[in-house]
Amino acid sequence: MLETVSLLTVALLFGGMTLYAFGFAAVLFAALPVDMVRLTLRRAFPHFYLFVIATAAAGAALLWSQNRGSALLLALIALSTVPTRQYLMPAINAATDEGRHTRFKALHGLSVLVTLAHIALSAVVLTRFI
Image (cartoon, rainbow, N blue to C red):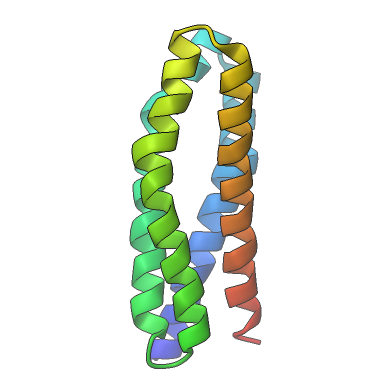
């Protein structure tokens, strides 16, 4: 039972991050004006990061007794999401507000790399269930 709940939690994390990263923003850009997309994403990202923190932390706690390596990878995701949410996201918003396009591109690129790394790490944990 614990293994099943752990698997579902990690699958939720992987699927949620993947859908958000590759689906949500793309749909918004296809359906809404750019200014509205920016406002919507700015409002949505704090919640996305809380989802990642909570789900990864829950997965780490669930897996601790079963697979410490996987638990540590999930803990790494949770812990590294905190500064991404608290510092990187506000810096990206400030760069946008100040019209600093080069800085925005660099910081946004870093946030994309962090998210891709998190997706990859959660995929590694998923493969350990096989």
